[in-house]
Image 1 (cartoon, one colour):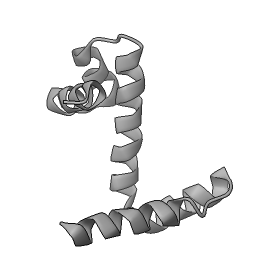
Image 2 (cartoon, helix red, strand yellow):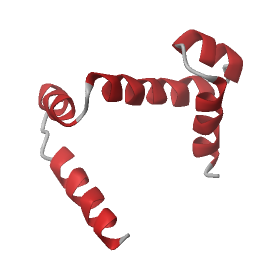
Image 3 (tube, helix red, strand yellow):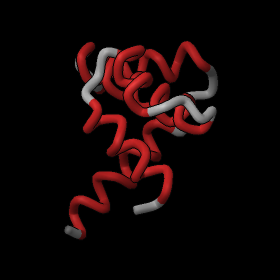
Length: 80
């Protein structure tokens, strides 16, 4: 588990080297597959829509994700 923590710290440090949006996009595209980048982007949208009060089923339909994915996002926002 300690190694995993070190990997996470290294990832964060690497991401923090981006000093502008194009550089951050370059870093993310080099680290993630197109599918992973799309999924992370959708997770952010899930959080935003939940915070705006949109119903979970509507979010799932709008973003083309499963209701379980939206529910997971809701739990993450609540800190569960």
